[in-house]
Image (cartoon, rainbow, N blue to C red; front, side, top):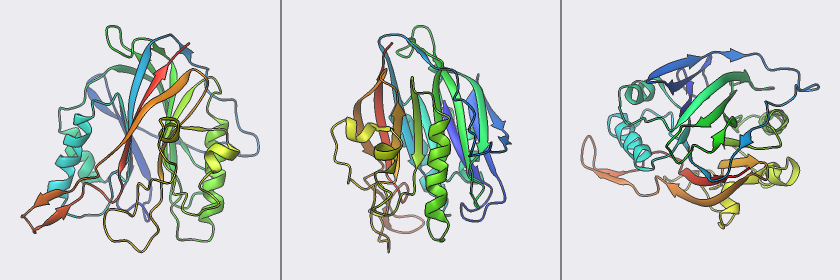
Amino acid sequence: MAAATDPSSHVHASAFCKTTRFHRGEWQQLSAEPAPSTSSPHAGPTAASLSPSGKLTIVTYNVWFENFVDEVRHPAIIGLLASTNADVICLQEITQSFLATIRSDAVMQNTLAVRNGRLVDLPESKLNRTLLMAELTGLSGTHTQGINALTIAAAHLESPGADYAQHARRAQLQFIRARLPESGAIFCTDTNLCTEEEADLPTDHLRFRDAWVDAGHSADVPTSDSLYKSPYTPRRLDRILYTGDGLQAVSANLIGEAPLKITEPISMDLYFSDHKGVLATLSVKG
């Protein structure tokens, strides 16, 4: 399953967001639903029924909306994603040109059935940010066959740079958390939690578990603003969060850390993105 949030032009100036999924051999587009009231959130999705021995490998990756050597970067990113053999890939900052490239590629393979896909507008967003949710069921004869109706969610939280943004990110995280079942769900995100006071919000205040930390890594390993020279402090913005005792992170790694050495159209060390991706494997138990 690939989930891709697709700004129409630039992530900071899009008129709308579109989300597509690859299902039953074809790409499909989902439409956004208005955000329900944040004061009275509806009940979460049906709890997952989890059987023993299921495993799920997931990638979350902000692939950078910047129009920068796209003819090299985009195919390279798709090759990198294919090399992970991930069951679920959640991408942020998808552009129309990237979407066209990934739609024409044959690397996608299904190990999961996807149902009840829905797209909901996030509250307090001036950038048209949305939450994608779906239920995943493993396919017989694959390593995911023990997984039944597991909720997966993906979102790109409000970008920094405006006075309202920090409050908006908190409201968006609270909105998302209220809609995920306690019994088990996975949330892939570029959090944009770019201040010290926000860094621990998902785990300390919203009862998320963090796959990167649970797999034994330090919480302060940055995923953004550490590849190219940047005026911003490097931080761990990109996370795979989850809920429920039936899920447990068993491994996690970063992807996209090493540059491509190119000579055309310019000679340089070219990184896949201005972010690193996060790759994690979770065990799924009843």
